[in-house]
Length: 334
Image (cartoon, rainbow, N blue to C red; front, side, top):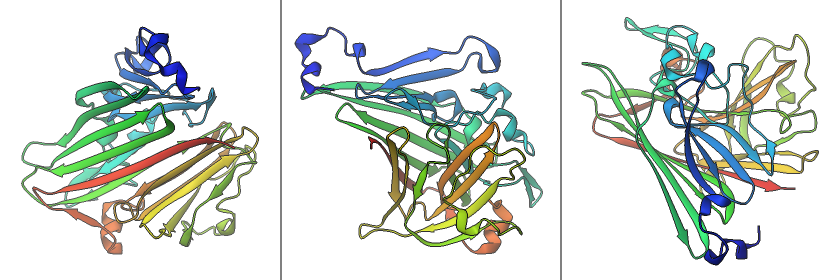
């Protein structure tokens, strides 16, 4: 967009071309769910779901949908269950689904306590949700923030303070999370950003680039180890694959992945600080009508809290302490 279009004499309401608006879903299994639609005026258009941990659902760039959306769609948090594998019954997909904070991976019984698949943070609604829009030097700056608390009586008390920053000057989403342990004891903190990309961003023409130190494929079948960044057309009967990637940092300590598809002339670059999230999980599913690529930065791989502890690669968040995480998601035309 020509920057002159942001001159104030041309509009009476900036929502004419950019901004953030709250809506409520009125029917279906998402009924009653609060959502926020965000547009930056440069072609970036996405939906934040405050009622589901302020995760990001759909995202389009220049009118092209990039995220993978499951057949469930947006599911109201009242239908969320953290028992066993019930997480899958309310997994709507989307660009970011937060996993954790006390389990990432399969259900597990740990010291008499049951932990469901991928934890329960993604099913908790936010409070103190705030939208701030400012016109600065003929550009629009949008900040959206909220707080999500995972807590139980006499148990854990983990507070997530989440902030998104978007501007009309670039097609970038900046996510900043602060996780605070306000509970009575130290906690094994497990955190994974389940980022899901789908068609048309994902196809057999998609190119994935990740500077790596090592790649390990999960499971006994290692036939596709070297095909971790090779994508098929939708294939009936395909069995999902999972890769544990150790991303190589640049001189500044940042890591990331670059995903592009020349057929739609679109690229996405996601980056973060390795010391905050040292691991990257790739979930590749090339099935017919279940066609998705998950690229998931985290402080762990999704093996569950017991096996993660056994690996020695686990993080303890001490009481009265906090953890900072920043993700930068950039969208570009090829």
